[in-house]
Image (cartoon, rainbow, N blue to C red):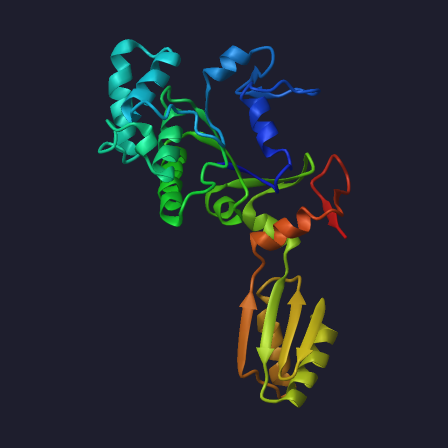
Length: 292
């Protein structure tokens, strides 16, 4: 599962449209499974499935009729079309609604059918362009479960999304796109570790102890600290393990926090730093990013 994460207008859908042969690139070259998306467009189309931002199913047909139509367009053998449609309806939990016109479906049901339609020909690669936009939490979770199953069974999925949680939950690797450029490409954990910091907040017994703690920690550990009455908040780039050294240092100075909390960096933090106006690649040949 490869995630493309970025704000509106970053270029995520453009990338998908080029890779799925719907849009010709102005320059450069792209391949899908070794097939050039321009010279071998027909071969590419038989190797991919696409669920775009707008459902590509017919509102006036039933769920079963939609899948059978896609089977005919995908040139499946006639004897395979019916069984494959029924298999997908079962898998996506749409059997009870299979004979109803699509216009009677909920948004989540239509989205599930759209993804099912992209799987009719059993493509080894599936493009999902913001598949859960507009869905409620339950519908999104159901679709996440299906996507995970597809990956477990050997499919390769390229997912574009604006939902940071979705990318964090699903993607094995994430490329952050900003202004048409890939500004980072790594696992979610590595992105957080590389760009994020650990925030530690300590509540001391009184304001004087808090001031002493801030002075001590700012000198030894902190990349930045704040003092708010009896609370000390500081940032460390060394990760959560620094907390052990912090507590030992406080104990050596006769100080003990009454309460403490640790907040690890989130993908939200990474995303906001990377997609800021001043985020640029230091070197076009590397993945190092500078965010001023």
